[in-house]
Image 1 (cartoon, rainbow over the protein chains, first blue to last red):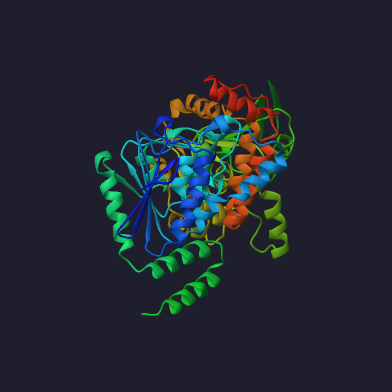
Image 2 (cartoon, each protein chain N blue to C red; image 1 turned 90 degrees about the horizontal axis):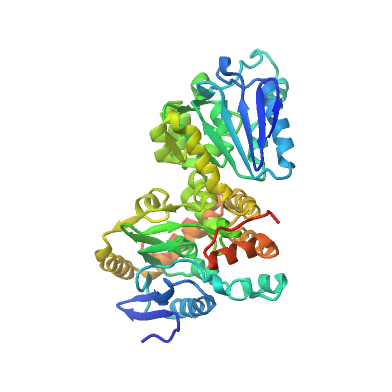
Length: 239
Length: 261
């Protein structure tokens, strides 16, 4: 039931499942995938039956990074800047009111890591290879990685990973808080799906409020964030 | 290679790397007003030096730096103390260097010494090195960044644990909590430092500066503002020939030759 060129989409028991589907290029993220993600995220946000989004990758890798063959195709810097905000797919990830479970395996490189960092619950198959090689390509991450990485890995680890571009494994990713769980490779799908189903079984308004409290609160002084939390809790009722 | 000898430190410039070596091993590289001034001078020099892509800070002898020389008498006025503090501060000068900075922690980094090491972007440590901020156990508050940089590096829980108890942390714990990025046998420190430096220098120099800028500024902004900064830095990078070189080299599977332009 997939209507997308680069993504598989299915829906069952309140869980929308999106799988990156360009396995011949290790799911390299390209413009078509950006457009597909943009549509999928809008649909997921609007569909009241969906209470959790699960993101996985088809084939040998979750995502080997951005499709560099398409890079440099913008006619000017002005256009490049404009295009970045015309379809702000990373903003859509961050603004999604429904929880996102991300399950990565194989290779999780560049944009793959950045997509991972945009998820709420992040699980990796043991042995997954991670890297943020952007500076070694003369660029910096562009899917929010320079901002999400230090927020999760803190400044103790973020410069190390970003400036050396080195590879690291799933145990290290756990230590750096890029993921919060590992799973045996052959059990990854089951474990991720079970986690998504569990989340989907919970009250979706409470879930949305929790996401708001966590995201908005992180940008506020503590006193204001606590007021926000109390307001959200009061609006939720049921206490 | 150019070597500039200050009274209490040596600045070696072997492009693209500049190395600052604290040079008072007999005093375990305790920071005094002269060393502080020289550190700030060296940083000011390096901030605008052409061709410097990486700064290394290390200590001579068996310690990185174990603190500072005794403050003026307690009877000194608040204003005099503040004046003394501003003459002694070094961390911000190091932290504001635009290029990546690696602290090579050759031995103990205690109090002001650790505050200096924490101003670097990465830390590689000899396995015998110990780390601590002991100011609070002596009834003082640290003032060269410890209360701010430590939680940003390791998170609030470990920062409280270290600051409020003043305890010494060994290198393996420091590696676990993210206070240092690599722990190596002392005999291998030089080799491992070279490997680490080379891995940073393998990146594009402009990209490395911008990555550092995005990392340093981002967490002080709201996430949305941070994402705008990242996007704008990306757009600017698109005007560099290094980005073209990086892409082409990747597609042709060869090592890029970045020129910093």
